[in-house]
Image (cartoon, rainbow, N blue to C red; front, side):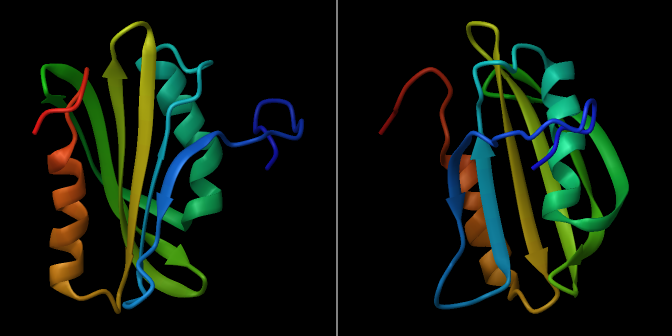
Length: 133
């Protein structure tokens, strides 16, 4: 991938990427590179990697949120991926210790509603600052 600021080659430090194998049509990814220290860093990074995840993205909503007591920014909209219509949600969340995490969920038009609910449950299960039962 190339950095949009200077066209230099750039590695993407993906922490986790999931794609169901039984039912196609969904992808979810998480990154938390050490060089992303502020919410603006995360938003800038999302701007760089976004075109590689969704073609022709049109953002329909942007909102601030608080998740587990941490500030977050969420954008959602539509676009295309692999030639198919998709919807997406992107999240940048402020983490402890001058870090941020970026996550993107992409669902294409053939994804079943229960798949979207299962993917949302992944987000709901996360706890910042440690594991909880």
